[in-house]
Image (cartoon, rainbow, N blue to C red; front, side):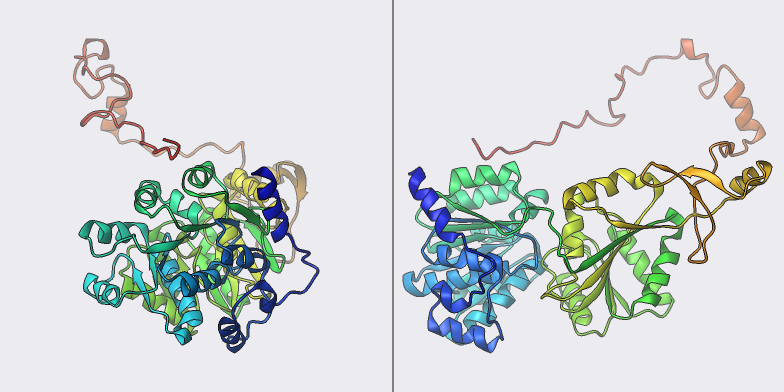
Length: 485
């Protein structure tokens, strides 16, 4: 069995120096003609490695970043398999936007051949989805939650599915969809082809492969954390209260489409309003918006009616917009791996792009984690402002140069430059700010019976152990499902 697996692995190895065409991958003439009409001649590395093995019916684990052509890597073999074996194909995606993007791409391939599709996502009318399901679609694209909703309503059954694709599997697990994925896989027919695509390979995906896939072939076109070479990456070291000021300067420097990532939904809304107040053509997208508003925002951004799209990480994957000149990380992502997905929205289809990230002096660890992941140092531009205390200290020492520690932790001598304004943290000798207490508050703080009217030693115990919440019982740790069971 090991020899067979090794032989299969060797069969998919190819020399990236050799230029290959779609005609070399065993694709039928009808689909080749469609690819020519779409002006697609040469496959991407993930397509070159995946398509021949997938057409033969092998289970696939594909590790590749977004924007590498994964949709056609599984879409073309799915059309080939369904054309020969009939049955139904199912693609599960983590977000509504990604599901719509996948369905749109597959329709470009299959619509000239009479392909029928259906999208099952939250936020859309059930009646509309039932209408498409009654037409017996060849391929269904769904998010996990809405798919389970249809399964429980018995409006969709999995017994005809013989090709299953889990797209952006690591993102689905990060979003907490592991129980739903397990529930879906448990109801799937055993005789099927399964293709799993992910940007990373966490342990949970390994368990899925072990329990639900048959001798899967692992295909990795680039190590996880690899970024596109055409992206010029830069980090601005700034003060946190000057993010917006720097963003405005950046927006005035670049003239093309700009995607701005903000950590929270409230932050997205606030920043969009501030940009509009300055006369900028900006729109927003986050999970609090209805599906129709999210679609409208994406359409406006794609059509260039809006120049700036402010978004949470809901747009980090599955957003296929051409000609995004600049990606700005207004806030660094909570997960360093999301940095790769964020900046991957620019420099697509062989074009170049720019990525600028804002970081403060206390975010050194986050920046180092990102650099470790992508295995390269990111160019830094440090803005340092001398506070009044710093300037006074410099004057008392009769020195025109003040020694401080750089963002990387190494000491260096800073000085004024002719470029942008420079900023630094306050002096270590400066006294911390303490708010002035009122007379009554100061009296309560200094009195031994502060607050209760009784000495602390005589106060009645609350009967509550240290660390226990005041209301209700202590929160139990989050339950994690184990696919190995």
